[in-house]
Image (cartoon, rainbow, N blue to C red):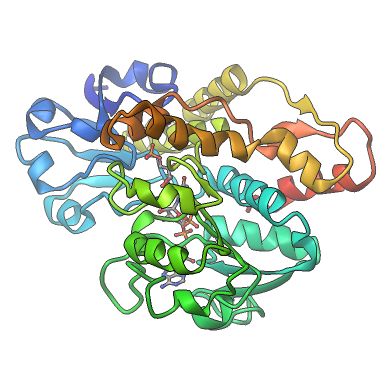
Length: 373
Ligand SMILES: NC(=O)c1ccc[n+]([C@@H]2O[C@H](COP(=O)([O-])OP(=O)(O)OC[C@H]3O[C@@H](n4cnc5c(N)ncnc54)[C@H](O)[C@@H]3O)[C@@H](O)[C@H]2O)c1
Ligand SMILES: O=C(O)[C@H](O)[C@H](O)COP(=O)(O)O
């Protein structure tokens, strides 16, 4: 087999154990990759911070681009098709981490969420998993997604109706063109539809909510509880928005330990399949890496679902990350990525088991595992 030259974002976990046998791995900061870095590259492995387009690939012979992320708005897929470049993403890889984030936000800022109506905007891998979890727990739901049918999702309704819910979770991709664009989907015209005491959680892409408009809206409606993980213009975010939020985090909803590793595993599988490596060998490597890195499950003691969620993830601590960076005086343009790079090892709910073999917490953890697909 040809020895490949693999250029990869340095923040991709498990690069050596997964890709080491395929060739040389050159690790670079994803945000600053340039065409000269790729001159001799065969394979490019990125995360969401690298814009992969003709300009980046013009000097290279790259024939495979893999993004170890769910989002693909940083990839110029039209150009890949034109240039015959094979590409792959990691759909759903960190959906468990984002659902954990949404549940932690609800447990922290609306602890009686189970008796509220939850609206979900975008019901794909992330929104769909949240939908199935909440539905199984008996929560009232409203969903908007132009690509779904009410046969599958009886709670399907208009965006404006979803925005009347007590809790609104936004999980759409960033789509700039076409029939159903999501750029500025939440804007000056529809922010006033949201109940002034509602909880709005945004963990899709920053540009889905016009941040400047949100800032102006919060100045006149400070009771609106906003949890923002994704921001317009990352990493140079609108920091004056921070004091008006209940919680602001540096795009880490999907940064669970499992979520990041899953991204690497999925891209290794896609690349190895494209190289026609024996499927048994691919599976053996995936299993070995998972066994080695994920380790044993841990016991979780809690008296309620909220307690269980917050025992796995204290969201308020993550809110302090940006606050501390602002206090330090470092420009957000550099601080934002540093916070993400140094992010702590957050294990998903699925990493935990309930030592009691029945009861509320046992059932909840079983549910978390059953909604994965
Ligand atoms: N904050 C994070 O760390 C994080 C982690 C993972 C994913 N994401 C983002 O979340 C997005 C969603 O992830 P996913 O895995 O669920 O993607 P997905 O593609 O599986 O689902 C997206 C859903 O949004 C729907 N949609 C498209 N346009 C819409 C519109 N105008 N209104 C309502 N719904 C619309 C689609 O039909 C689809 O069902 C990703 O594209 C990514 O950008 C963020
Ligand atoms: O799209 C995704 O999968 C998520 O937004 C992911 O968490 C992005 O992480 P990044 O690529 O920016 O490290």
